[in-house]
Image 1 (cartoon, one colour):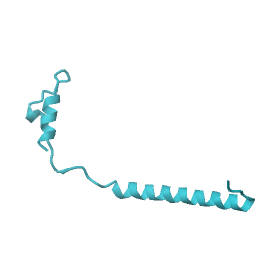
Image 2: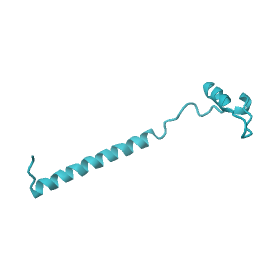
Image 3: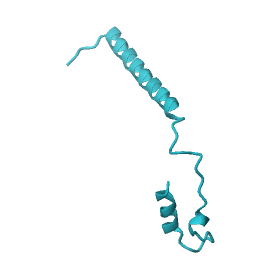
Image 4: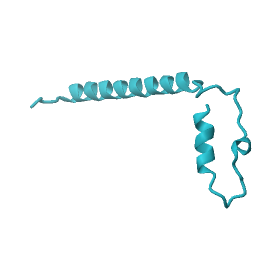
Length: 72
């Protein structure tokens, strides 16, 4: 077991916090860098009513929604 003196304990704590800050900064940079990645072609718009959906809130339009997603 490692015996800690006052200075070595402080140095290890500083190293831990520096590593933690580096990890947090890396995660933040990754989030910012990937925030503009698109999901598919945003210029395509679909009207599910043209695929046969009723859209009255009572009818199950799940099969039509699936068909619309497949057509992407």
